[in-house]
Image (tube, rainbow, N blue to C red):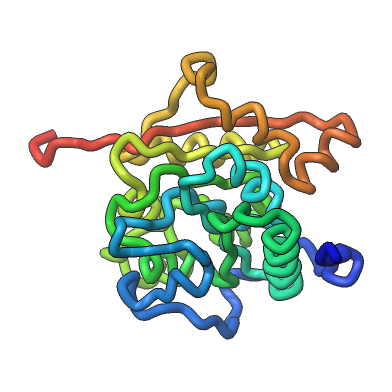
Length: 250
């Protein structure tokens, strides 16, 4: 008997979650303390296995499930802060594995706050691709500090020497790695472009130069939010950035 897929109606939750609020998570102290085999059945660190793709704010897991068969040898992870939504994705992946022997073993989700705990999971330069698809726009100016691509983490604003969120993304992303951003809100699109372009470790890539990147054609509609925008005939704005290396002498 095929495993039953979870029904989304039982896992509905408000679209917004305050990343500045206190939440209860089970995050590792450092990457070496993470129990990766608990998430990936075939994971073997001794063979050099490691997560390379990360979807931050993965929602209902559409991107992970789309990319899994396209990159069967690449471990991918989603991070989601909402309890019910992350539970849904876990159940969805479990059902997909049960119904498709040997498949979908390369994707998993953890419930956490990426704005706080990203370096707890990943080593320097570990990731090859970072995805920010339809992030919460946080329209009010007073809430801009909650945006996932904010130039400075609100948790660290009291310290003028503190690292920024963009610096943390640059830390976990390998040189030549890519950051994919998609949104249906033009103001958010321009916000993300502005801050990434102003950071010395990221460089925007013209979309026409990435015609061979098979991922791009799936980004618009692989997520629930993207499909909703398509149904409503809304606009979508995409930008992609490369992690670059700069000389200490520059």
